[in-house]
Image 1 (cartoon, rainbow, N blue to C red):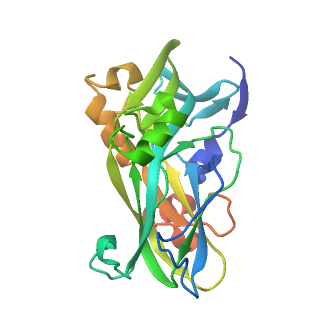
Image 2 (cartoon, rainbow, N blue to C red):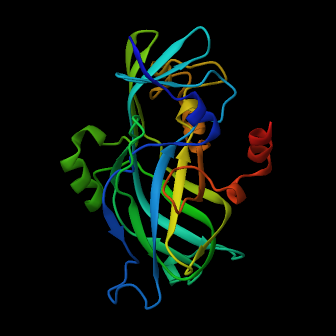
Length: 270
């Protein structure tokens, strides 16, 4: 296999922006439509590596990871998600069932989010949000089931994702794998710094540390993490812990300096 692009610098110093998916605009589930004065916020996904391991390398066949002994090539990675919720700073939490003004829940999906490994940037989710300062974004990694109408319609269109919320394919030490998970989890992502909505265009990137999914800390054979496997819970936990969020108004998938935490800033100065 011949290397096409080495991504070490981009992975260690900032996320590799992967395509975010699909063009969809979502707004509050309200027959009156978005409130006057609401503002749109675009939401993208990106890949990053926060591990002190050899940096991933992008090949024609996918993304190659190594621990010095084992080699994992990821050829595709997909998530099923639904709903996005923005929570304002200094609130006691959202309660969308009673119309809480401290949060905005956007009903959509489920939808498949393909994590593009080639660094391309495509369309993003756009949500309509009330003006204010927000410090948390929530969404669901969702296992579609046939007892829900929206889920059944999704399964009819995507039969390969019945009861599956995560799928990754590739090879581990040249042996093919097809990793699937029935993970059902609400992700609560604290933004590195609060997001101000109402003072111009606003964009957010959720960066996913795909490198960490199959590590403990050495690489894990994804075949051992499928349902019932010895590493099933390890990889599920890694997936849930792999996501960060930050303001990204210029859509480059890299946090602004004031959005970096102290550890990131120290690493950049070293």
